[in-house]
Length: 468
Image (cartoon, rainbow, N blue to C red):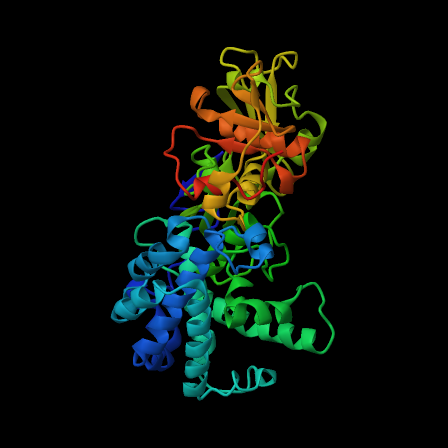
């Protein structure tokens, strides 16, 4: 299987209609973007407040509704806080004049950031002459671009690029940027339907407006949290769709377990196909290159998990046990179908026969494991103070190391399974996550602890899914 850069089966990659990163926002939105830049306090503060709100979600700060903690997928460093600002300025240098206002706003408290975003949202709305943001039922009737929707589009683009690695000199399509703008307008149509009592499949935008304010329009469309308006809601699928849209201007509905997509001479693929890792900077990251997907010199438009094989033969490892640390070798299985390639990763012991199912092994799908990592990662909020935890008297703690690196702990009569990932190979966290989330519902997966990291107050909050 090759993600081939350069020539494709249908010719060269299309470069017409592309806009350079250094001026893409002006090229896409013209004088309306310039109008926004002329109010750096309003525009920059709104972007900085958005960065601060994203940080509050990532850090599970008090006041963030529980659903956003559960659905958060934006764990790249560039997805929130100062990382968001640095990323925005790197990809879109036209925003440099906003740097001071952005950084100042990013230092606000979560509540102040919500208030600040709503205030600047309203201020920009008053400046807009398009008319749509005064009456969203008139979408498409004005001339030019809505300043509010342009601002939201830029925030969405900053979130998308936070998880992108793009080959040098590949620039976005103007039509791709405009497609994200149109999606920001379309979310208002969903909002109007809800207010009229037709919620459809969209969920609860109205409730989101009440709890989070107008930043909800961005949270619904950028993959930072799993509340997308895409046909499918999985974040990994959304990131592939977003990447293809940005660089081709086209919507490409993909399979739920897609890990690579090729369209119009552009190939986007999940980083797990390049490096088998579920680190926060790797899981869900999308690489974009000019090229195509090929296998045995035949082109394919998509790579997806081999679901049939995964259902029939997932492996002999069905529970957390000592044998999982022995699966230190990976075999890539590739199967051709009529329309796509199906891929599985098989983890085995080094030296075992690939066809010997009597030996310990585990078969996983690349896209599936990325999705599980997204859902399991993150913090949960503890309403008690650190002082109260320190004063609490914890009963007897016993540890059963019979299945090491799996530790079976008993604390106050409750059983907890913990894995020490420092004593296994590089694939141990993936194997543990897959076995644990197959054994338990994904929302209650056991914690995978890397004991080599320094303990921090935030680590003490434990994983999003908690222990089991």
